[in-house]
Image (cartoon, rainbow, N blue to C red; front, side, top):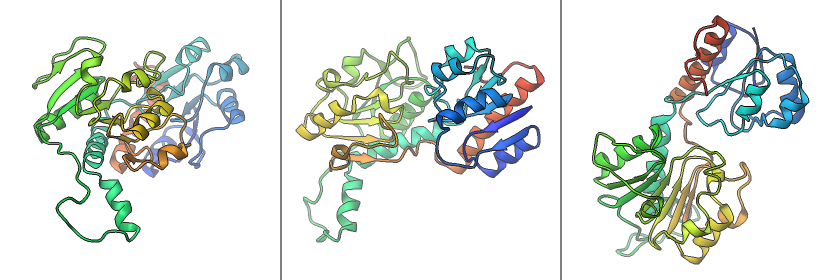
Length: 314
């Protein structure tokens, strides 16, 4: 089976793929270009794409009767793939859930702590040579222990965040989810407007038409002026212009972001804000995690080649 790997991956993953498939390895950190996307469908039996490889409906429309039969996505999120168009063209789509859960939850807690305690602002101050020494009212932030967290989306990652908040920091956990859920530790399921009233609002929803700009001017207005917004889901869940306005005006206290609406572009107005912590999409950026994700994608490809049920079909 002829396989295209669209992006640079850990060596162990590439070696595992080469042991089983005829691999073309695109050792490049940038997404597939428009011609590359069409060539991938036309010239390969299988493709291992990832975030930013935009397999939209127009790509499938331009390659009628594609040779490719599976897109084994590297990552749990697959909003860069038009799954309906892929299926209509005869392709199956898989992803890599589970492998990313703990690492992404850890980044959510990192952002909660960094925004609450003004850690990134403090580091900028120190690196700029402007720190004049400790004093009792220096850079006072917000205590995290015992506060309330409102988690929007209570899938694997949302529950992992909730566990860390409850057991690690004694936080009251509120959550909003599209279906009823009863976790095995103290939580309260609430409507969206109640979750938004928490001290820390964490976004852990998938990106789809229903969640596009879920956080906008209206929902931001429901948050407390002392609250912090944390986004580890996908960038387009947040109306970035509305968020910038809310942060500039003090409508909310701060934000911690690992994802952005138009990655890798970050609006200069967002970059200029001191009350933000901005990370370069580090959610799963641990070697062990990326290896696990890659091996899960390879397992999906092997199952497809062997004609057995796909472990992680979308």
